[in-house]
Length: 77
View (cartoon, rainbow, N blue to C red):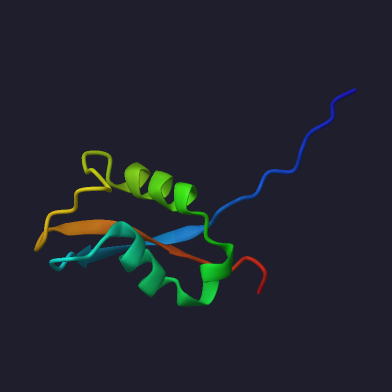
């Protein structure tokens, strides 16, 4: 018998943003996703950032450079 555990599907769009001095992945993602903050998981958003920016270190963003950031959609609406 095949039993499976439901898996959450995280949906997001991608937005291209120029990072300013002092910005972090978390601060930008929180600002972009104010409506879905309650459901955001930090390890998931770091993983998503790495997936869409494979050559970038999420812990060492360079000011005045552009990066892609996840813009999550609320699947409960």
